Image (cartoon, rainbow, N blue to C red):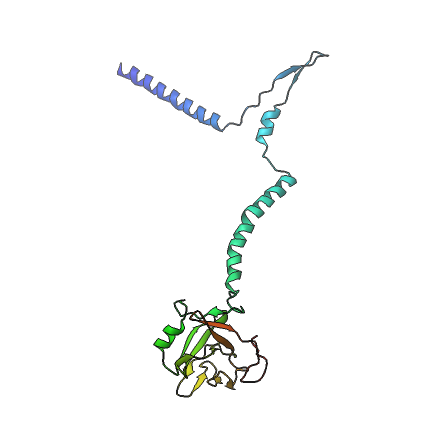
Amino acid sequence: CRVVKISKMMKGVACSVVLLFAGGALGFAPPVSISTPRVMPTSGQVQTRPPTALMAAEEPFVPDMERRNIMNLILLFGGVIPVTLAIGVPYILFFIPPDVGGSSEGLPALTKAGDKVTFEAWLSAHNVGDRELVQGLKGDATYLIVDEGEKGKTVRDYGINAVCTHLGCVVPWNKAANKYLCPCHGSQYSETGKVVRGPAPLSLALAHVTDVEGVVTFTPWTETDFRTDLKPWWS
C-alpha cells in the first residue's frame, strides 16, 4: 500500500513540474496574431484580414522631423537657456564695478563698517596731521587729512585717492618720510599726492571734501590739478 501511495505522489509531482515548465515557455512565446475572416460581397470568398493593430503595436514609435524640432526647441528654451543665464549673468556682473562715483551731488565718506563719516566724530577721534583711509568715490580707498585751522582742527578740503597709478596698489602714508610710499614697486608721492618717483606715471587722484549736514561728502574734482596745472587725468 505504501508503494502505491508513493507512486501516486511521484506522478502528481511530475505533472506539476511539466505544467510549470509549460507555463514558463508560454510566457516567453511571441503573441499570437488573430486574424478575422472577411467575406467578399461579390465572389463569396473568405479573405483573411491582416492583424494591423498588433503589427502597429509591435513597431517602435519614431517621431517625425517636425516633432523632433519642436522637442529640441522646448529643451533649449526650457532648460539650457535659463541655466546658462542663471550661471553666466552673475559671473559677468561680478567683473563690473558698481557705479558709486561720478555724481555731481557727491557721495558720503564711509568707514570700514559702512557707516557715514561725520565731521564731529572724525575730528574728535583724530589729531592734527592724521591721515586715515575711508571709502571714497567709486569705492576707492581715499585719505582724509586733519589740518590745523583758524578755529582748531579741521578736515582738509580735498581727499587723496590711495590707489597707486602704476598697478593699483594701495599706497600707505609714511609719516617719517612725509610721503606716500608704494610697497609694490617703490613709487613715491608727496604729501599732496603728487608723484615724485616712478614707476608710477601720474599723481594720485583728488576729490573735493564738502560738508553736507555734518557728513563728510566727496565730490568729483574736475578743475585743473593744482599740483601740475594740468587737466585732471581721472576726470
